[in-house]
Amino acid sequence: MADEKPLKSAYELAMERLRKSDADAGVASRTVTDAQKAAIAEVRNFYDAKLAEQQVLHQSTLRKMVDLAAREALEADYRRERERLASEREAKIEKIRRG
View 1: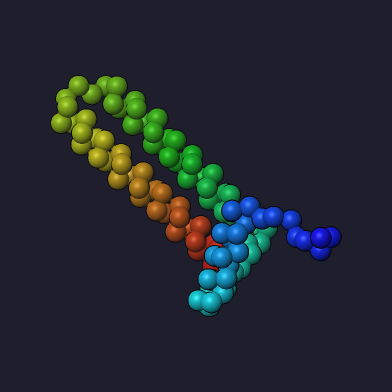
View 2: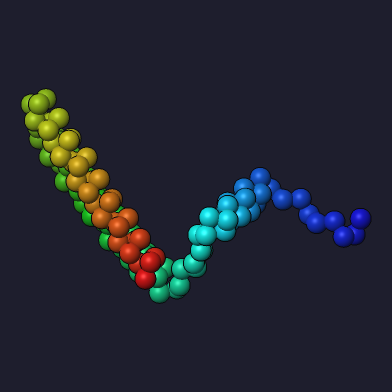
């Protein structure tokens, strides 16, 4: 009884299965260095600030608009810009992770 291992949570079991399936598929796991973590944090902070700026500008412009069609066009532009910034952020983070 003294040799029994403690029970694992569902999360730990799932992570073990994922690591095993990655190993079977030949996917190598790499750890992120401290420099990479710092660079990723810097990229995230930059894009969070850009997204916040876009939101403030968008809300300010929306308050001034009355025309429904123009508001819809503005909403579509805002969504596209947010998606563009998010995809740029993710691409830069992935580039940092790859080295």
